[in-house]
Length: 188
Length: 241
Image 1: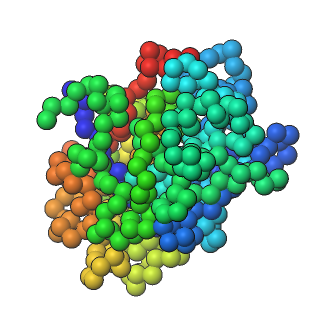
Image 2 (image 1 turned 180 degrees about the horizontal axis):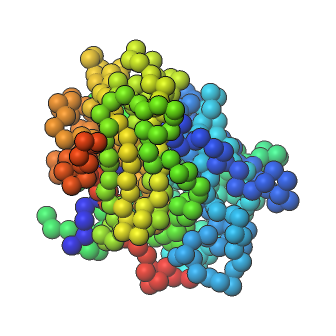
């Protein structure tokens, strides 16, 4: 018989010394030729910035391979120094930021390809469970249109919240926890 | 009602059963403006979430699992050993996986700059630890028992003593942040964070048990806290390429 899961509880406001004692937000070096910056601000349902959130990302590398034993597609190269994991707190302005590379497409639920995307977890005081969302890329219109997850979202406005905005030197992905323009969140 | 295997695979709602807390739990005031209102979208199972951070290989320092030896002197308080096993949804041990913890000191005060509770800081206690699970999914920390502390959620609100736990498990799906409580705490009844888990048995799974076998004579009390993560390990069949 499968054991029953341990319930989730909020991260609370006091996690910084334990979880953000080092810089986990730069997945590649500052001079990586293909580096991209993804940044955003977390807002609550009153439109106020959330200064005590923690955002984590998980993604495939430039070839579309995840640095994990369950991804055994050995025809795709693995960058040993690219873990695919990042973690950023939100600062006094509610902002988080990552330096990473754009992942290549990865397999979807039926074997078709998913558009390039980054998995996101959001933790904060007032969130009894993490929120899960995805960052998609604005220069992938065709792949985004065919993506099985994006196209499963009927509400166009909600779907649009998952696509980052190109701001020239960075991709912007704001997270609205609640209210007008709420970000699309997932469950498993 | 009996659960069918297929319902689990389709992501049946733990929240509806009260096993996981809801996002909106108005008694916990901070949820009111932070809980999403749009319905959640079911995410199909793909490599994007059946893989996850192999964060377990990150650097863990020698004294990171002993919160009583991170400074020149010993912290004040009741010295305790907290240990248990981390299991996946199939009951298999989660090996070599990072466990991170943080907690208030024995007086109920966090070192965090935003904690304004007028209880003393302890210069010998930071309250942060980490370790890797062993080959049987076991972790072990030495620390002091955290104190209860007040918060401003409602009049005379106090958090029961707890230790925050952060776990990765084998996949993105299994990521969990939770809190471990201590048996018999009189503050459970009025704590909306604890009570947000509506299922009585599920609440009990957040409470550690006093364990005489872990307890070391003349030295420290032992508490046992096993953690079960959501999600079953993906088989190749569930990972079409």
